[in-house]
Image: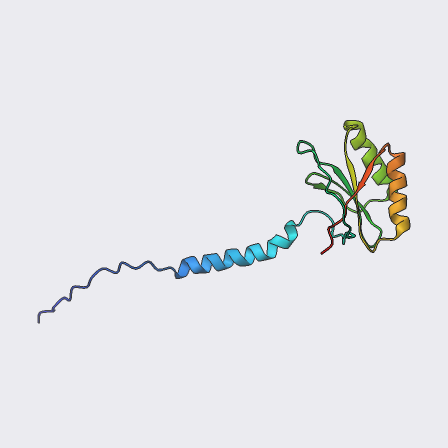
Length: 141
């Protein structure tokens, strides 16, 4: 009994199914982690028509945020703080101003934050040695 061997041509197609699986896994990972990479505190900024402030590129400003619940946060570059009390905030701002007297200080106040909360923050900043404070807003849509 002789067996006849049939010669088959080698398959030259690339199997892309594993690549599609890997791509879908990476897509899911990025969809889950992207919202976590958002910078800063979630603040609904007030909308106004105003000119943009030119910020120096070499040093980031100190950003003090107030959320809608009245919690205070301090951000400098990539550093973000946990919610702070006014006393802690004043100490942190004083320390940063002592390091760099030319440091620009900006306030991000939530639209729903009470007026008194923002005024208290500005008074604490003034007593911490900050002479000029910028207010961050959004352009109207």
